Image (cartoon, rainbow, N blue to C red; front, top):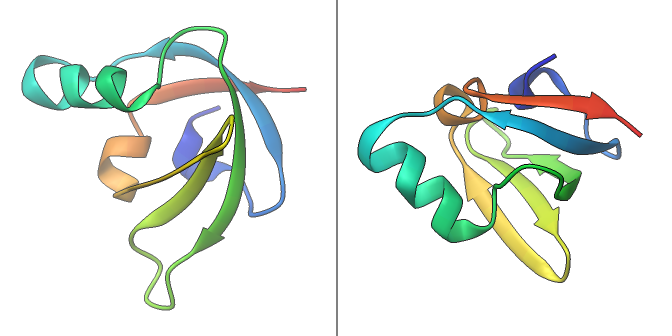
Length: 74
């Protein structure tokens, strides 16, 4: 399952960050690394971007970027 498929309110664990290049590095800089727990907070009114909670940090990314992140339900 990828992060863009997860519904708001769900909590998942990151399995693999499949993004490459600058986008992959930016996601890692924001805290998207293997094993981190992610809560999906909400989608924007027009669906993009999506807000996530990583620890105490709120992060928003586009669905296209979230599609590169493999997760598993907790």
